Each structure stands twice: as C-alpha cells, then as structure tokens.
Amino acid sequence: MLKSNRTTSVVLCLTLALVMLAACATPTPEIVEKVITQVVKETVVQKEMVKETVIVEGTPQVVEKEVTRIVEVEKEKVVTATPEPAPEQVLFVPLTRLGGSIDPSLSYGQGYEFLPNLFDGLTRVDYTSSKLVAAVAEKWDISEDATVFTFYLKDGLEWSDGTPVTAGDFEYSWLRTLDPETQSPTASDMYCIEGAEAYNKGESSDPESVGIRVVDDLTLEVTLAGPRPAFARDVSGVVYFPLPEWAINEYGSEGDEWMKPGHITTNGPYVIGELEPDQEVVLVRNENYKGDRPAIDKATWVLFEHYMAQSLLAFEAGDLDMAWVSGDDLERVQDDAKLGQLLQEYQIGATCFCTFDTTNPPFDDPRVRLAFSLAVNREQLNNIILKGTYDPAYTAVPPKVVGYTPDAAITGDVEEAKRLLAEAGYPNGEGLRVIAPHGSSGGEWRLLAEALQAMWQENLGVTIELNLMESKALSAYSKKLVEETLPYDIRIGRRITVLSSDPVNWYNNLFDPDNDWLRTRWGNEQFLDLIREGRYEQDLEKQAEIYQEAEKVLLEDMPVIPLYHTVARWVVQPYVTGLVFPAESAGQIIDLRPVSIQAH
Image (cartoon, rainbow, N blue to C red; front, side, top):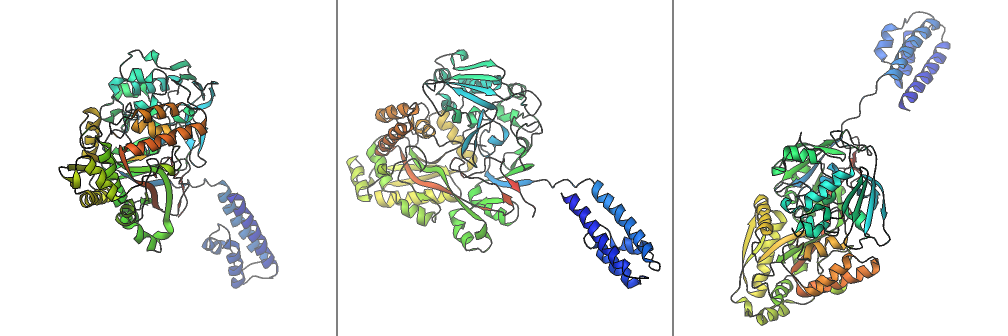
C-alpha cells in the first residue's frame, strides 16, 4: 500500500509540473525552480539532482523530457526497493533475583513470570479473554463422569531443536515430577491423577500405576482419581508443561544445567538466550515455534534484590519499560504530571499471610493464633503503614476465588485478643517470646514486619524478635522448611493465584497436610472432609458452597493470619501495548503473546 501511494504521488506531481510548463513559452530559471520544487515536494526525487540535470534554457519540451526521465528512474527505485526491516522489539521488565530453581518440576514459584513463554502445555489460558484455548492439544474428550480426559495433539509441532513434540514428552515430564527422587515441591498438584499420590509418596514403585497412558504419538489419555471437570484448565499450569527428556539426560538437572543458554530445548515461543541469576534473564525467539508469532523479539527480565522497591528508579532512568509502584512511591507517582499518566492498577488474586507452625508451642493452641490475628489492625497496616497500596484482608482467599465469602470475615478486637491469650495461659503476654516473622529484609516486607512487631508488642505485651533475611538466604531457609521440617513460630508469606483461580489451588494445595505449601503443618478433619469433597464436586454451585463452608472453618481455627489482598500498580511506557494483568497473573507479566512495542 505504501509503495502504491508513493507512485501515485509521483504521477500526480509530474502531471501538475507539466501543466505549469505548458503555460510557458520559454521557461525562465525561476519557472524551472518552481516546477522542480513541485515535482520533488511529495516524491522521492532529490531536488538537487533535478536542478543539476535539467537544462534551464530551452523549450518546455526539453525540460519536460528531462523531468520525466528523472521521475521515472526514481519511481522505479521506489517500486523495486527492498523494504527496511522492522526495528527489533525489545522489552525490559523487572523481577526479583533468582534464589531457587526455575526447572518446571522443581520450581517453587521462581520463574513463573517467564516460564509460560518457554513452554506450551496441552492447553493455555488466553488472559486477554480469560478463556481456555488449545495449545499443544488441538482438542480433547471428557468422559461422562469427568474422570477420563483424552488429549489429541496437533501434528507437526516441534521443539526448538527440531525434535517432534509427542504425547510421550508429557508422560515423561509428569512422571518425572511425580518421581519421589525428583523431590518436586509441586508434585501434589497432580494428585488428582489416579495413582499419582501413591507413586509420589513411594507407596507404589510402578510408574504404570499412574493414570497417564500414551495411546500413540499424538494421543494422551489421563485417568483421574475422581471427577475433575476443570482438569483441562489444570494442565495449562507450569507443573504440567512437557519437558525435553534428551536435554535433561544430556546436561542434568543439578543447578538447572539443562535450562542454561545453549542447553535448553523448549516448545514455546521463546528460548533462554542469556541467564545470570543475579542480573538478568533474556528470552529470544524460538524459530521452530509453529504457533502465532509474538511481536516481541526479545524480552529481558532485569533482576533486583527487591524489585518492588527498586524498579521505579530504573524506570525513570530509562532502563525499564515498566516498573512496580510500591506504597512508598505511590503518592509521588500519582502527583507527578508524567508518571501519573502512566500508572495502571489491577486487582489480582493474591493474599499476604502470616503463617504459624501449628505444631510448635505456643501456636499449637488456636486461641493464641486467633489472639495474634485480632491484635493486627489491618486498616492501619494497609492505609497508613503501606500507604493504601493494598486492600485489608479479613478472609483467606481473595475475591474472585471460589470459596470467597464475606460472611466468614474475621471479627473481634484487641480486648478479645487479650482475653484469648490470658485464657491460653499467657496473661498480658507473660512467658511469650516469639521469633517472627521469617521474611524478606527489603522494601515493603520490612515495613510490614516492623509494623506487626509493634502491634503485637503493644496490644498483647509479647516480646517479638524479628528474623529477616536477604532473598537468597530466605530461599534456602524455605527449602529447609520443606526438606528438614524445621520448626518455626511465625512467617510472612504470600499466596498468589498463578495461572488458575480454581479453589483447589488455594484450599487443597495450601492447607491439606498432603500438600501444605504454606508449611502450617495444620490439620482439621472437618476442613479436610470439605476440601476433599469440593475437589471432585461437578456441580459448580454446590462446589462453591462447600468451599465457603471450608473458609469459615479455616478462619475459626486460624492457621494463618490474612493481612491484605494484593493490588498490582505499574507504571508502563505508553509505547508498550497489550499488557494483561488478570487475577491469575499475580500482577506480573507472564504472557508476551499479546504485547507489542509501538514506534516511539
């Protein structure tokens, strides 16, 4: 279209020029100058080129012939010229330094911001529409009782090294995650598959006992432990991604060696081009990807010790295309004429908790746990300490997650907290010395920890010792909690809805002792009966009622203290378009597909 328009302009200008010349008997230098100016005004013809070539003293026919010749030559150049390649689209976004594995089987949340760009699962959530769409599987069948899912893979898909993608790649990956020797922290996500729990816990040593069957290279059949209508959405998650067995066997899992640049093989739109755990993660195009080609050519996650507190300055310096706005910076950003225009706000599915080790005195007593919860002034914490950045949380799950019910909200005051603590044998906090909270030492986490320390000491009379760590030390400590069952008092943690807001990812994964992601070591038979029933309930209205009842039981027994529900606030350069931050995205960019960079 552009070429056609340019040619039209040349013809129109030439026609006008000839009309002007025809009106003159013998063109003067002034007339020729005027004609040349008109010819070159909207065309690619260079004025000096015409002036040097046209014979000024002569007949109109001579000038006409020479101008025609020049225009025709330049017109041919326009039509046949090779177009300039579009500029490379490069995106720079912030992230916290990597303190743990980003292997999809081994990660405990590390890398979830970029892993969905490296691998395609059987299905994928299109966050622009929030709909489930086909990915590696082009379609799937569900048995009438929702216990058998048959996935039919697209033919012709390839890994980044050209190897065909097959159903066997999914079988290998899922069994690797479930293998007890892998020690995957997220293997329990797969317990809905028949035999998966027994195999993962070592109660069965036969992988064929797990309900995963390769029918042929393009057909995968999965049998579940019970009805699970949402399973097609489950398999869009990170833990269900296919993994390249040959690359893992060649380079090994130790230190994520198989995922390093030059070693990694992916089936998604990108591969890792550079990886420095303390500096950056760079994704570049997977040229063998057969899906829709994203606009972004290269995305760089710039790594910070505390990106929520540090990324804004880098954004203002021009080093980032987007940055998180913390409570410390929110008022300044809102009042800034330029930054205020770039501010975007998203309600996301996340809750910040304090978690108790419910097996460790004094927090094995629910009265003590409830007292600590009631002694927290959530309005002050969020509106003053954190400067209105988040929403005070009086329920465990955030809005939009099945099970959320305002009827279960925490009620009570400081006087009630004091009464409960005295009833438990600690009047005015006597005899209590608590090490809390284990958490990050930077940014908002420190503000949060210090505020909680002050509230518990003032309202309950309890001596609180803080134990805050840098990100690497905190990751190592969290790993020990899992592997060595370390006792603790209170920890700060956050549960984020990643890739799915299904209640199983909250209630069952966080609070079922078989999963226990928050490491509360809590068990309540009434609660467990409810969530295990809810997991396989096909009637969605009834399922919601079951989980709402579970929420009430949870908040009565208080294995965690909900502090706030998260609101994500970003400043984004106006030339970045297509960013999507749904509730499932944890307020992070997790899908580059809809993103593009406009000319600026």
